[in-house]
Image (tube, rainbow, N blue to C red; front, side):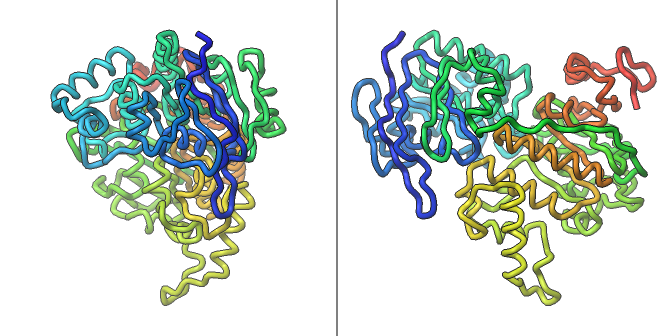
Length: 509
């Protein structure tokens, strides 16, 4: 099929301090998987929101199925046959999966019918999720599955996906690609935003490149290399990471036989968790989303203080009963997987968001000194190349990748003794991902103990010194990165690891 489904002509969208889209033109054919590639803040998400009716353009024209359209809102977009999966999810946490999906469907359907449809789609496409689960109990990866299922239930003619694989495992990505190819074969067009260059080369038919709000080129990604796509996107290739051997020091964070009952019926019990995190090392934790990562991170950060006193030891002191603020005083900093809502307050400025975890600008009587706070915020914006209008910009005004750079930078700049970081490069471009990983390695080389929880195996193999796997609330023994293979870690993700002392293909530490 070669007939155009969507044409974007000279679309411009300006905000008070930035031009997000500047005379952007784009054409998508029927049955085409079309990538839109660009670094964080290039204007990709704004363009997608214009197509979906969530943002109104200042100038330009949107032509869908041969007709000029003025899409007033997402409901109208869905009636036209356009569905979108956002990078930042739009789910009501107090409702169940089925109830969230039901909100976007016709009133003639009853809730049991929706639950049955969700199960059908989930089974057909390998997007496992329980329709009765409350959204607040789901991991980020599981929430992403809900968004994708909700979009597929609308039988879209145009499906827009904004970083759909950012927290999916390689196995889940493979399954999703099968789904997307099947949809394209049926005539559905797909607009695909991703910073994972190998995905674009593998999946997409056409790639449009954006930089600073403008279209700068178009290519056939299968004819390109990661390096050439990177040059088109950011004007250069990201620097190679240097992962040198580093002498580890004493144990800083010790988790000893941690067992904890789940807080709700859809959670995961933690069983006999053992972690020995030392100075000057990066310990990576791999696993399929929803296997206890959320529960483990809550108990390590201090958001869940139900653990036995002897089960969590920080620098020789029991901290199981201490909250996040008290643990930060002892040198433990934390980057959650949810950027908006936990990592940052959407409506607050970047300056105000600094105060969530940093107190250097707060005086003895609780007075806030704006001058050092402004300087501190500006330093992070500059050092981590955060594209924002300034320290007064609200968190919600930043692209997902730029907000991630700010949150990671805020915690790294605190010079932690222990850093726990979840999905460190979720939704960031290749240049920013390289910078974040480089900064994590720099912290480790300065004798910080770093615990990285990620569903990106490539990332864990790139920066970790040791790797453990979490599966169904159990944690595997650790294996040296040099001795590990992706096949080994992949099999461990199913809980198939050996007992300590009897490794089949790797040396355990």
